[in-house]
Image 1 (cartoon, one colour):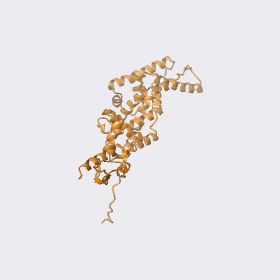
Image 2 (cartoon, each protein chain N blue to C red; image 1 turned 90 degrees about the vertical axis):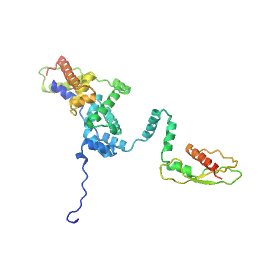
Image 3 (tube, one colour; image 1 turned 135 degrees about the vertical axis):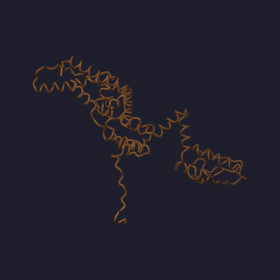
Image 4 (cartoon, rainbow over the protein chains, first blue to last red; image 1 turned 90 degrees about the horizontal axis):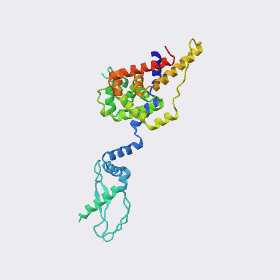
Length: 140
Length: 202
């Protein structure tokens, strides 16, 4: 009976890890699934009790601006309608960038009374333009 | 001189010759192939550990995959007090227990209940019947092992994997080694008694 018990127990746990499992694990550790990035953000947000949107925004600010985002910043924004003085231009470096300073051309507005068109731009771009406008305010 | 003694780049050491601790260090540094070698070496032990807890190869495969991914993510916490095999098996064991408790699995088992075969052993049976009886006995013993209480079945099956020492199994299950040995012995005693009641004396 001892042999029968040993045999039955051995049969229940016989086998080896399939090669596909090893391959899947290697694939996963080399290329994390697309959802993992978002999951990590969600986990981080939960751990510091901040909303996912806020965490995503802060994450984006801390990261190297993506080419698409840089394009948005550099690309000429829709021309504001300015009354009075002609437009001035300012060359400045991005506020948040880990790479070497890179000049970004921002179209600024004059200090004269102006009317700007309502333009929908990403939050980061808005922040940059606002700061640029503040800088411009001190320019004679 | 270079013509007589050509400079030959030292051959890259095969991963097969590298120790587990070195592989862990290399995997920590981001070398996925080193982790692959660790999986190749200890995959069987980890897989059988999961199988001992779950009893289903499909579930065991999923758990092993999750366990290895988790182990890779937690390599930084591996202190080397236990072997990599024991450490990874312990992760797989916890994952498997979590899965075993999950509602989905319970429902699945409910839909597909294990059928206990009823066997009437016959004395002095002809050879064909003896063979059938033997096959029946295997099924009966298997069913009896499955029907054991978890606290006895887990140690018995872990010992049957033949991949870990008693000390390592005790560490994986989180129980003292003496308790583990007693439970294995108790499981055998219980099985023998049930088999004898069914008419199997040898």
